[in-house]
Every structure is written in structure tokens, then in C-alpha cells.
Length: 292
Image (cartoon, rainbow, N blue to C red):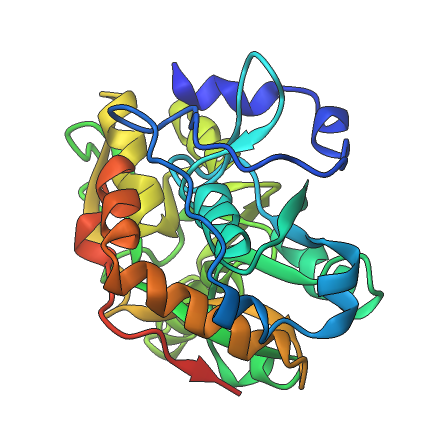
């Protein structure tokens, strides 16, 4: 099962040599999409430090198929996020040096200068905007996943006292479930037991093994997981949706080049092809907005 792929050794993910643009995609459907080529007028917008170096240090989360997951054969992280990063970099006449990290380690790593840019499904919120600028690249909400048939009859309104798995440092862990749990306490009911795991796939495995009652994860991740594992199903939406952003360090002029490169991919249809390849067409946006 695809979910088991997350057991690939984390050491493989730390091999960070520059990668040639590639769209093989471990979880994509159909043939690879032809790699984008450099657009000189957009490449000119890249700050000199990146242009001279010739590549971007890109970081993404892992264990979140179909957005990003290690290929079982090579260990290279594949999925929608790496593919989009490679296309944006190609438009800007750059290559990609890709790293994997847990969501809670990404912002500290960027502040320390280890990474230039993150494609890691970050919901754009005020707390993150204090340290990063963002380009929105899709719109999605959080969803509640349960075992097939929903034997406990769970939904967004009756999670009090239940053990719910999340990805460590995720929006679901820091915002979504704490809010619901506080509402439980206000009703004199038991708080939600929020169980954090290194990534969302590991949370799903914990659900399958009976260690928790449900999972709260990104909508596209749960949707893909249910297609790969028939013992999982979606029980409810947990939010109305969030703006999801590509993040760079605050005041880094790279954000403008990335915004225009993404808009170019939207306008030329490449972005839509990537969404379709990974089965997440309904998350697409028409305009790449900067949030700063």
C-alpha cells in the first residue's frame, strides 16, 4: 500500500544534491508533463544571489501523498509540490536542490538559512506571515478521516474525548483541533486528545492500527489516502478552507519572481496539467496572489 512508503529511511531524504528538473512522479497519473523552459524576462526578476548560484534550496514535507512522498525505488521526494517547484524554478532558469523536513522544522530551517523556499502545504495565517511572505498556490481545507463505515459515528461536532491524529506542527495541530477542543471544554465535555505524528501518513497508519479514533489532515492528502487504502474514509470537513502558500523569508524579493512564474504556469495551462496529474483539480486557483 502507498501509505507504507513513508517507512523509507529518512536518511535518504537528507541527500540534497541539486536535482535536474524531473516529472517522473511516484504518485502521478498518466505520462510525465514536459518540463517548462526558462522565460528570460521572468528569470531577470530573480535576486542576484540565487541567479549566480543557479539553484534554489527547496524544502517540503514528506509523507503527504500525492503532494510529496519519497519514491520507494530512489528515495527522491516526488509529487505535486516537487513537480511544481521544478517547473517554477525552470521558468526562472534555476534548478532545484530539494530537502524533506517535518512541518515544525521548516520555518526554523528557513530562518537559519538552510532553505530558500518552501512548498509544504502551509496555510497562510497571521503567525506565519510574521516571518514568511507567501504566494498562494492552491486553496484547501482540513478533513476528518475515520475507519471504513465510521464505526464510532464521528463527525466535526462530536470529537470531544476522542484521540485524533495530526501531523506535528501542522495547522490541524496548532489551530483546527485546539479550537474544537476548547469548544468541548466550554460544553463541560472532555478535551480532544491530540496525537501528533511526524507526518500525515503516519497518523493514518496509527488510525488503521487502532491507536487513535480519527485523523485530521489536509483534504487532498486524505482524499488520496482513501483511494489507496479502502479501510479509510472521509467523515467530514473540519474547515471552510485555507489559502495555501509557497513561503520565502520575510522581505525576500524572490517572492515576486515566484509569483510571476506561477502565474505564467497558470496562464499557459501547465499548472492545471499538474493538478490533473495528481488528482487535485478542485484545489486550483486562477490568480497567484502575494501575501506579505
